Length: 477
Image (cartoon, rainbow, N blue to C red; front, side):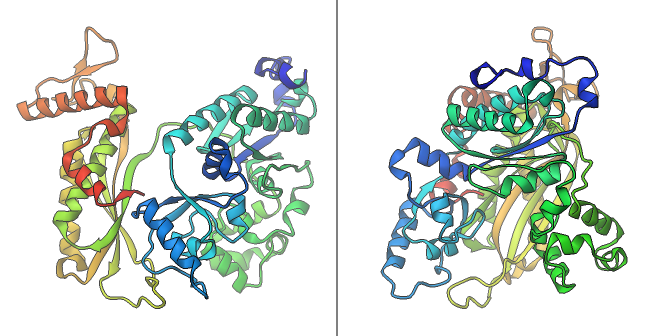
């Protein structure tokens, strides 16, 4: 059973109970520079070039024009004045210049002005992601996707029928390459924490197997930031204590760590530092929230302008709810506020301001675009009155709309007056009852819009207010 002869059925065709007695194995599969790699695969002329897939309020042509101006400078700045947006993905050729995902474009273009800047084609990326999930599902019945291009696979018992675990990893990589044209890095270990670290050790196109008992030795020389759960703040705190490597963390005094980080965090870090992680590979469940946000071209405290943006954001959130058969009991907004007057230094905005959220619990769960928008506007008005927006001392850089406390719409049948009842013609479908004429019109409008989007895609129809703002350069964050 090798190569093309490999099938999921053969892999898991073992005697009853054998899998439970087998050595536990977890694969962490991480695609290499996913968005940028898809672009290079689809356009061979980009092979070998530094590619940046960027998310910015500015047009791609404008970003290219700015990059061309930077190339003419005798001394390149650390940041480029006025550029907003972030790097969604960078090819390894761009990474050689120091460009990284989530880096501000203002810095990325200064580091590599010769890069090829491309807009994201997220429909295409999701298409490839569906291929990946199909492949992952053939190798394991238990898959935990982390993102479009990353997942954990529970491979416990696979080697009983599939051969040595490394060979199974190599076959997985080969299948991904053959069917998508892309490379993946795979980490193999006895748990998720170590498998995740292992997948990063030989990128791109790597495969690292950490044998049982080798976890602590593998982790010891790595920086503490390599561990999941160690962010910049924790890293800085650990460094202030003289702890820079995982090995040093593993030998740290628990009481001292607990004093600075709390007992629970200290215990978790000490376990992870020696490669102990009992968390299971869990297939995805229902989402806990649905949200959408956007970064502004120009900071503003104008509530009327912000409400224009809420139209499209609310519509997209409500459409996502209906598409997944969900309703929300809670609506929230997210705002990033900055001082209206601030030191811009070398053309770079100083600081990222403060991120605040405000939420509202609804009397009934909803999937209505109009009600989500109405609630978001109410929250925005309240926020404007209680922050520096009211006197223009604070301005908004980012605005988002979200919903939480989600429930399946079909489960609400008959629970509330006006919520709905089962359709006699279509089992599982909910039809309205006891609704006001305005609510009926809203529901019929949403149904018509959803039908159009199912046939032609989300962008086929949009609220006129939302289109107006998009044309002015605002893009989804």
